[in-house]
Amino acid sequence: MTPRERVKAALRFEQYDRIPIEREDCSGPGIKYPPWYTGGILNKKGSYTDLWGCKWFALEDGVCGEVKYHPLEDWSKLDSFKPPMDYLRKLDLSMVDSHCANTDKFVFPAWEPPMPNIFERLQHLRGTENLFMDFAYGDSRLFKLMDILNEYYIPLLEKWAKTDVDALHIADDWGSQNSLLISPEMWREYFKPIYTSYVNIAKSHGKFCLMHSDGYIEAILPDLIEIGVNSINSQIFCMDIEKLAALYHHKITFWGEIDRQYIQVFGTPDEMRAAVRRLAEAFFQYGFTGFVAQCCYTKGALQANQDAEFDEWQRMNDAWAK
View 1 (tube, rainbow, N blue to C red):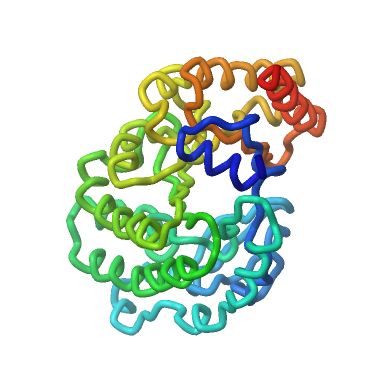
View 2: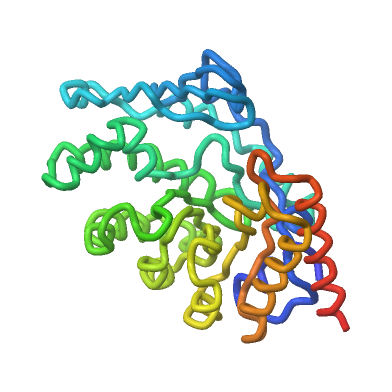
């Protein structure tokens, strides 16, 4: 199988020759993005301002930092606020199709500039505390702002959907360590329709839809499955891995990652290997359940643990082949 065929098989719960590994089987779209921030260097200590006017501060190298200036902290600025449509016009995707044609890997848009992340962007623009108060009071201005964001996000997705990428990518971190950040009922009322529209853009153009969401998000997994999300990249070690496998095998593909909070940074190579085996045993007892090994590392992840994870997935694949 080619890498592209292998990942597609995992997303369809079909038979594949080995467990797909993102760093081996996937590719970005092969283009250079226009600058989407000014005033600093991404992932370096210091500050920078993104294309929405949010100012980020990083206290150390290797992290994106946090937004400390929120352009719409004061609602009085809402009427004059505009999405960064100029950036959308500058985003040249003319070379994407040739890249897709010349690789046998599974291609989807990279993280930068951010794919649609409406919940996170609302926090960046309003400030997290303000945003949660907006939800609590049902402030109508919040819904106007969401519409403004989608004036950018929907054309962005549609622009990517017209290329030959294999999937579209959406992202929002919805979980704390042990629950959603808002009630599941509120999530379904405010955000499920939005994500449904995003997924529909992908499906109407024959694309898969991948989603990233950190934290404990089990409460909305049935909803993501219902609206057609093909794969979820989440912190599965925050949740009950065996329960996830039992409930959702052959329903959604887990684009898995190893615990970044402990194992990657503070664990041992043996613990890393045991974590890989736990995932393999949990998910593959049900056959071709749909699983992609991510092999993505946080700042501070020990090199020995990175090597151990990749090697253990290879060992899993050697055993698979036999």
